[in-house]
Image 1 (tube, rainbow, N blue to C red):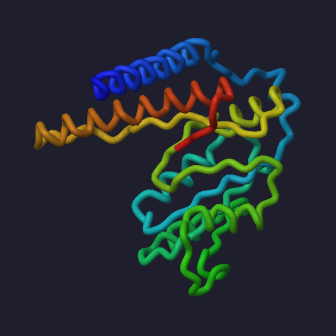
Image 2 (image 1 turned 45 degrees about the horizontal axis):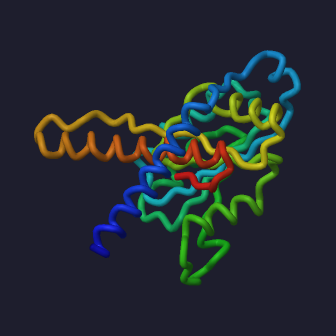
Length: 211
């Protein structure tokens, strides 16, 4: 009987939380950058990318960022090579854009063993950044053309101190294995649910989280 009561209470609590998230999600309004907001957009942005062994992805990532609609003189890209053993730095250095900077985490930490290398990489980059607004992404991500323009517009309109934005999977489903195909679909749905919970929680200021 005790087990039944506890299980029912937990189920009731879980259902309540899910309904709260759903209600908060439905209240979220889409945001679009408009010319009147863009006109006052003069915030300098530092885009930080912590990368470890991303030689296969870093080129596409950087290419998507440098073709932003946001003025090139208003953002910098800082790539932090987190102890890569491949050619991540070489590929990143092949870009001759003046607003791309590559730094090595080991030059700041030496042989010190860290609890979280990625967090340390981001902290190091923030320390050398010039931006009033810090934007982070991963080396295996590709961003849309209006990515920075939209973030800057939202930042300017709402005077935001923290912005969480969505991420979606874009890789094709496996065709050689039904199991892997179903597994990837499940992973995508699971990830989408986290995105929804993130948006709901941040928008209501219930709690903050982001991937």
